[in-house]
Image (cartoon, rainbow, N blue to C red; front, side, top):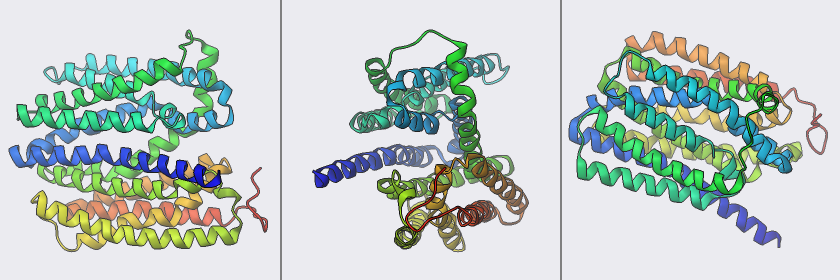
Amino acid sequence: MIVKTKMKRFNWIGLESITFAVRPAFMALFSFLVINQDGAKLWGDFVYYLIGVELIIMLTSWGQKQFLMRNFSVSPNEINRSWNGAFQIRLLLVITLLLSVFFWPILESEKPMLLLWITFQFLISLGDALLPYLRKYKILLSSELFAALSGLTVYIVWRPNDIEGLMWILVLSSAIKAVFTLSVIIKEIKIIPFSLKIIKGFALPALPFFFLSFIGLIQNKADLYIVSFQMNESDLALYSIVLSFLILMQGVSAIMLRPFEKNIYRLRPSELSTLKKKYLILGSMLSIIGATCVFYIVKLIYGFELNIEALPMLILYLLPFFFYLIEAHILLKFNLVYTMIGFAFLGAIAGSVTTWLLIPLYGIEGALLGGILSRLIVALFVVLRYRKLPKTSNSFQVT
């Protein structure tokens, strides 16, 4: 029975890992096709829209994924009410932002696709917590694969060579994933009429998770945002591709820890130390191999020029996650969300300032150095705070 349960858990993790990898793989292949056909400048121009839609969806998330996953686990009988609380406040937010985009006096030709794109991405995000909690990994994987294959097929047949055409490809892919997501939501959730009580019950408790996820996004991508201001479209295309591969590697680091997440704070200090050593060894290997692959993929397949000095920087960009990810999980178990927000904020500020100052001097390498500093600061503060937690000989004392 125990073996069967473990096999089922690893099967879920395997499906989740593949699902997680499909979207960045799709975007990597999509960007390669665009750059190969029309050059890096077109993709660099398109990255501005990718950044904008990502920020809008993050603003409308209100920390719902992390908050709902916790609520679903603690109060499984309240899934419907919790989901509706998140949905109601997020619907108000997305309507407000859609109206802002609609009345924005620029981007008139792209506006219809942009509104559709944001709407479909919002619908997809409604299942961010619900589908993983219900273990609907096959549906998630099917939606990602079908959306990716449809988008790539349409691009290869149509061959659009402007921003409008590229947006239509992602609108199509988003629409397909939204249909899959809604098919589960319709079966599992009963929509509750709007209620201020329900909204308040979600809005305030979820606020720390919103701050954490939003600042985490800024910390992870501040270097990309600054590159978009300070460098030309071709360099922006290069850096967005490099960063997308690096974030994929970061996601792998989190998935590697997934089998231990639920019980990690119950481990004895000696057991945790053993886990940390193994995690660091695997992480170091993944960082070296992953960074090397990214370096040569960008140079040999995409045809961009990267100095050899960028290779050790790519490795250092990835390594800090393996130094503090376990400790970060334990800090969150202690409800130290605002502490984590503070660390992420410090890292984001330090990294942003460094990136802004170094890009004029060192270009892409300057942006990488800013990202590395941001991650090292977070790693340092998280590990130091973790060492101050109360411990017993058996486990951590969670109060």
